[in-house]
Amino acid sequence: MGATLASSLFAAEIRLDCRGFIDAALARDPRVLEESYSTEEKQAKIRQLKAAVILPKFEMNMAFGPTPGLTAGFDSQGDSIARWDFSKIGPYVGFDTKFAQPLNYGQYVTGLKAAKGDLAQKQWEIQGKRIERTVEFQRYYYGYVLALELKRLSTEAARQMQKAEDRIEEQLDEDEGKASQDDLLQIKAGRFEVDKAVLEAANGFQKAELAIRFSLGMKDSDVFVPADTLLLQRTEAIPPFDTLVVWMKSASPELRRLQAGLDAKQSLVQLEEEKLGPDFFLFGSFQYAKSWAANRQTLSQDAFLRDPVNVLTGSLGIGLKYKMNFWNTLQNVRKARVDYRQLKLKDAYALDGLTMLLRQQYNDWEMAQAKLESVRNSLRASEALLKGVAMRFDVDPSEGSKLVDAYKRNILMQKDFYFSVYQYNLSVAELLAKVGLGTDVL
Figure 1 (tube, rainbow, N blue to C red):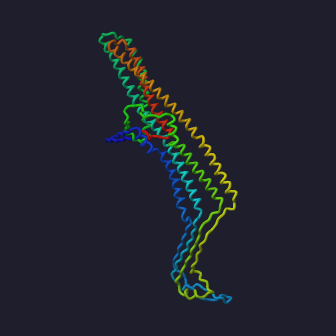
Figure 2 (figure 1 turned 90 degrees about the vertical axis):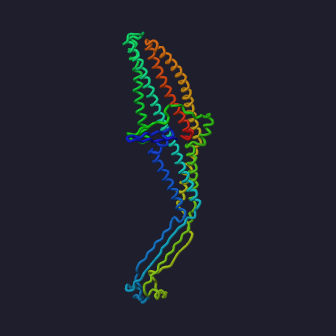
Figure 3 (figure 1 turned 90 degrees about the horizontal axis):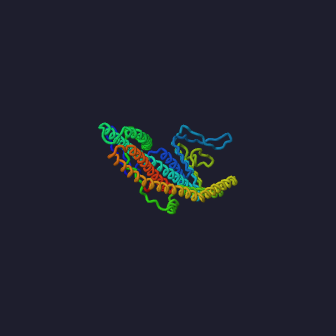
């Protein structure tokens, strides 16, 4: 990846190659940022599940402050009772703790595996969309370089046509040579195609520049300069189709997403099946309260007096919870099994479908390659023809009409050549995306 940034007082020059442009565009793409939040949500769910393993229920309350004392007395039946004595207030402190610890560790492991599978499924889905966007940004980058090439091509053609026109006008003014007014008119009439190409190239360049600016979030004063000054054919060696299929089986985000989804669904089936049994848990509680108000030590020795404040008690045991609505839980198991079988069926024909799409893209790449070679050979012939016509025009300006025709053919051929290079480069990008490689080979 290559990237440089040269800044001046009024403008900044951003120079990037294709890989650098893709990385920069992905870094600020709001769709990528939005999708990253969905994975963070699933990661938070896994952390929450792990945090709930140890003592998911643990409550502890504490209180302290003043409390009144007690005094002995008798009720209307003559029984001994303790009465509040607010004249003897003392300090008080109390603790109340309750906890519960599930013992179904198997459900935790299965649930954690399902949550991780769900996260992996989402990550591979995002990876697939990310690869699709790399193709989109490659289309922007190569489209920008193509627009630059067409702009230079049309400008040079217009300059050469103007040069030929000036040459004929010069000979007409000097009244020498074989040039005539008809030759000048033929060149001027033929300039429409060249001027049209200039306007179309300028319009295409503006559209490509807008796409680049939007992708990078450039300021109005910034200038984008591609590191590739020429639109050249990509040099990756594309292996045979069978090799690409092997690569796709191991690298395709779609296949990996399906496999992660199958693992998650299978874990969910196991989890629902485990819920058919009872839930065992360990529970306990501890309560302690102490007051240092007057006369409490004396009264506590009376077996018939109950202290409403001082407490020391606790409990510990193993509990069992069973859902009596067995049929509802069984329906959840059946639903989970159906979902798993549906996804399993999709996984069975997914490879065949992806292989078919890869074959179609491979055929498109072969066609783009053959078209590029054909256009390249035709371009060589067109340039040789133009060179010969231009040499004859230098000797005989009356050959102006033939020069115009040669320029037209050559500029159209060069235009077709650059479009063929553009289409070939994109066919390679789309082919690698179908395999699942993205920009790994750039």
